[in-house]
Amino acid sequence: MPADQRVGKWSLTMAWWALFSAMFWIYVAVASAGAVGVPNTIIGMVLTIATYGLINLVLSRYAARTGLTVSVFSRTLFGLLGSALASLIFAATAIYYAVFEGSIIAVAFHEYFGGDILIWYAAVVIYAIPLAVGGVQHWLDRLNGFLLPFYFAGLVAVVIAATVLQGVPTNWIGEAAASSALPGWLTSYLIYMGVYIMMMYTFDYARMGKREDRRFLGSVTFGWVFYAFTFGLNGLVGIYIMSAWGLEASETGVVTAFISSLGIWGVLVIFISQTRINTANYFLASTNLSAFAHRAFGLNLPRYVWVIVSGILAYLLMLTDVLSYLLKALAWQGVFVTAWVAIALTYIAINWKEERYLPEVRPGRLKPVTAGAIAWVIASAAGILLTEQTALPVVSQLTPLITMALAGGLYYAAYKLSPPPVMDGQKDLTPEEHAELLAAEPQ
Image 1 (spheres, rainbow, N blue to C red):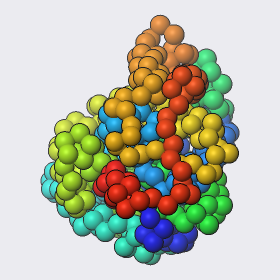
Image 2 (spheres, rainbow, N blue to C red):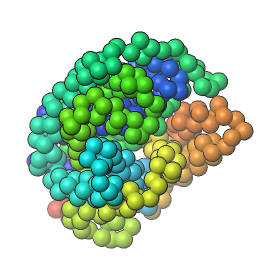
Image 3 (spheres, one colour):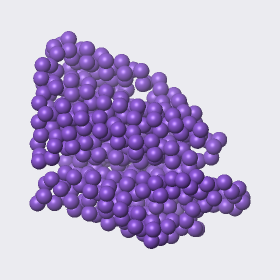
């Protein structure tokens, strides 16, 4: 991304912190607490915040330095065809999360106002589309910055209201239960590894940051400060209010807790939170669908077309029994994403000191498929097999860690066998080379 198109650190922070208000983080914490107990979940949260903070420190600073998207960076890692697969997986995952978060709004409206749930599904998609058409550089930062204080106020209000109406839950901390042979805190940590798609989200947003803001972006915007609020604050609030109302972990339980506590104001908090997160989901779904279509079919349509396509796909998925296969689809895609993160970190670690050089991304200078793509596919296939096998349940639970180690090791060997080409980042490009670089992917 050219320097003149990048945005200031606070604008990017406001746009990115849309993801802070996802109800999904409340649900994950509550589900973890139900499985392994609150003490173990808190330990898992702390370790997760540290891990996410460190990984995204590396990824955000690298993305801001290079200005590359996930799709273009994947071209270096996996070749032209491999980058198309990365874009498709990224887009599909973003659409699935848009389905989940959009369904939360629809369920809230349906539960409070009644009516046909299918109409509410359509309504939440239709109003989200025009919001996501404006890019981060245009107005998503201002929209999400305006709504952020209202979400904070909503979290405070729901805790106070639940306490006033139900009293302080005496057992909300509970016992350090465990539902497997693994330590409970490790099980909780592995649950949070299932949303490593946040690393890819980070990369696509951080490339819009200015190079001189890399330190701030790595710690506050995308780093440990963000995850302390996103996983820590959201998680503890969710566990507390669900305990206050005696509700079990479910996709609709969070909605019930908010509405039971705040009534119509609870519906408003959910509306604000889901509006913020879905601007990010649809934005990233559209950019990666655009990149996939450009690479796979030679299409170069305006991004607003892909926002509409993303909305249509999200609505069609809402019409199905999406929860029956959503978690399975996310588990499989999560394996590919976890492997991508390990490979990206390995590449960056190998080239960490080579500040002068950038990954080569011009199509005419790259292979269709690289040795890195083979490493990615092998590691992902192994991860899916380990996830699906039932003979060794402990190994199945440890799949995210095994996949990361396997992907990193295989890619390191592939890199040494066939290093990807680089380009001189300090050399002035000819007009022809600059045109070739800009044509690499739709901006």
